[in-house]
Every structure is written in structure tokens, then in C-alpha cells.
Image (cartoon, rainbow, N blue to C red):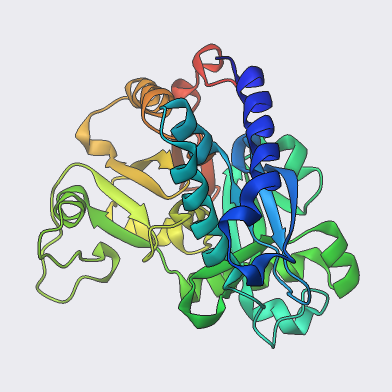
Length: 328
């Protein structure tokens, strides 16, 4: 099924869900309003969701239909699928309000919640036309407002828009600098050895070390490949926007290193003395992006390094093959 046919089918499925979902929910949810909405995600991925709203509730969560439609295509019983959707609706609606101190129209209210995210420019042209951003090679840095949800329900975030900037009456550069400052403090760059990360992913009782913070006497591991992210490993490639990152990398890789975009969540670091060429690494990244990484989590098909003289992130021309890059 091509992507257009699939989108039409998911929307038709979502229509059916909105008409039937209240039959699977308790009496207290009978005043719930449902409407279908197409949500643009990263890299121009568009998902079909049902927006749920209850009278007097600040938050209107979105339940995405694609995973449930996949279950329909696999032949799972419709009653079971509808019950799963109802469970997700109940869980989503349990988060009833934003933190009392948070007012998106007031800069002083949100300034300590600002953070940054790095995304691909070409793949997000439509979205970037609606929000403030800074260019960084073929990438863009955007600002987000990140906040804890009530009752330990996790973390929510919204993109900073031109309209928010207008309401705040604050210069965009001031907002950007505050977002970067917050991110560096609350979500510092973490460098891990690939071996340590693999052991952590396998669930072995092992403490991953931040190689930027080795204690006196601890030896820097010579693994060949390293992973750069943040403590949560969520949107970890955003550390590329940190002003002190180049200095941190030069302190542990004085001979220089290459930065390979693994996904939105992490970068792979390869020391230059390992002997791999930018062309080889570019081919490797493109292949992984095409076969292994979800489309909305791809950062770039290109390889980067920090220019020692310009003191900035740069693409490596030898790694670029536009004809082979994923269509954006």
C-alpha cells in the first residue's frame, strides 16, 4: 500500500473510532469531544490522531491511530483494538492540567522551561516557516518549552512559535540564549564508550561513565567508537548546539574526531586516527538511516567535524552524496 492510500485508510479508521469510542468508555467520559487531526511531526512525517477534550480541562491529548490501524491490518479482533484505544484515552485524559505556574503567553513564566532541539532543515521546511530557528549547516536549532506533567505522568513539550515570541515581546536571540543556557545545565552533554552503552542496553548491572567527567586516575577507553548524547538519551543530538561542546570534544580527542548523526537522540563519535574516510562513514550513515532509523527520528545523512579555526560545526563535503540521500 502506497503512503497516500495508507493515509486515507488510517483517516477512515480514525473516523470509525471517533464514532464508536464512547461505547468502550465509562459513563464519566460521555461528555468527551473527539475530533480527527493531522499532526505534523519531525521530518514532515504526518500522523493521524484523535484529539480528546473534556469540559473544563486544559490539556487536549492526541491519540495516534497508526499503531492501532497496523493491528487491524494484522487481523486482530476489532473489539480488542477498541478496548486498547479506550485504555490509552483514559490514561491520556488523566493528565488534566498544566503546572499552575506555567502560562505560555508570559515569558517570565516559561523562561526556565526553555530548551533546544536540533532537527534537519530541508526535511522540516514547512514547520520551520512557522517557528523561530537558527541555522547550523544543514540543521536547524529550534526552541521548545519543556515541563513536567502532573502526577508523575512524564514530560510534555511544545515548540516556541512566532506567535509566542510576539506575545512575550522578547528578542528572539535572548530567548535562544536562555534555551541553550537551560539545556547545558539541565541536560549536559554525555560521552559514552560504545561498549558501555551496549552493556547498558543489554540490561547488565553496569554504570555508564560520562567520559567528559572521568575522575583522576580513570583511564579513557580506547574503543574506537563513542556515543554522544544527554543523560536521558532523548533528543540527545541537540548537544550540537551547546557552545562548549567543541572544547569538550577537543579535550578528549586532541587529534580531532568525526560526528556521525545516528538519530535525533545521539551522535556517533569516531576519532580521526581510526582511519575511516568521510566517504565511507557517509555511506554507512545513509544505509543505517534508510534501513534502521524511523523516518521521524532521522537527523541527517551527512558527517560533521568541528573546524578548529572557525570554532564551529561543519559538514564534510566528501561525505555528501545528494543523489543517495533519503528523499525529504
